[in-house]
Length: 506
Image 1 (cartoon, rainbow, N blue to C red):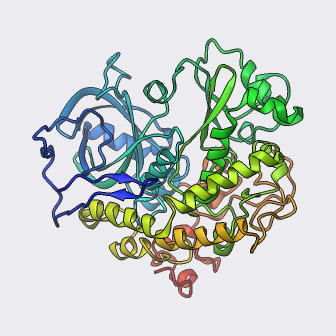
Image 2: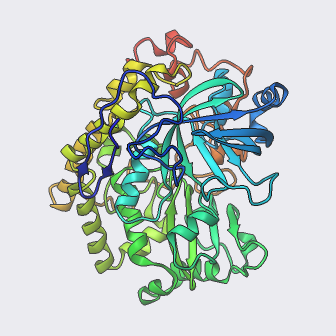
């Protein structure tokens, strides 16, 4: 197999010839060296085996929602580590996978939970994502690669063929954890405050002068030492500060790049939608944004939008609700120079990694790399036919084909930038406008409901009563009989044949 080189922004790709059979685990590369300097290898699919006692595996599968660590051993591409910790993970997929009766959960490994300082090639934590809602199994790795090539500080990825407790779970995406090693690699100053954002704090609206008022703010670094002054100053400036204060609390250019990235890729399971799936990292009182959880990029998280609304997402109001609910975007875009720079970044994307021919070549190369593993994967959520179709065309009524997305979204962005289509919506945001999506216990009357997508996401998990069908455990009332072929039913139309008879989901 030739080494796969993805250089999206430059548009260069080396050829990749892949056989029909997966390569043997631990196979040497062209240099004859079997050990890799990093876990994030992009030229081949890595074999990963997590060894658990049968009782530990059974306990994990019986109660995956507990996300409790179990003792295990790890064999990663031929390198063995003893006494590591493994648990299920998955705000957006865990409950749905359990209801399906599948073992194909996402997993998190902590290598030094039980052995202090234990690492794998400089990394002490690993995340394996299961490709939920993505028939191509490429979206997450592809989106992160675009983010990095576009100049964002973003996690690295690799593809792995995963075995858990002797059970072959198939093709997964390995994602770098945003933590100590990531910060050391990405920033000159790796000692700043790091936050993971969830609603309500994740919208970055003003919620008072004390950190206790900001529910959903998770401190990932300096938890015991920070006074949160930099974060409180950030939300204060976004609430009532002057434009000349923004540079004092934000790396404005980096934030504009992040907003352009999410907008161009219609990545709405993010700040632009539910106000989550991103990190804020502080250096000298100024914050940068780190993208996270990109598995629903390329329009796969709809936020209530139609397909037309996703493709035509307003570039100057790329939010799921009124822009007033997203002060990071609203305040920065109110400065003409910032909006002009943001448009320049969008142009970079549509002329670079999202350019139709270039994007298609990248998709082809990645598909060639993983295809033998996809075809051998018996636990994936979609069929082999869906995999091939999803590379170019829509799968059912809910998943936009990758090449179709790049072609149509690129054209929509150009039309808006050239004034041939509107780029704004009177402050109402995209997809019908209205208030932003409203998690439990908030007061945005009339906000779009998060229910009905078959996914018990992090918002719904805080109050499972909000969307009982999305969050129901196995054995709860059937989803059938409502005349709606929702996303759970679309994955297996045989589940509710009457609901899905006319949906054309395959």
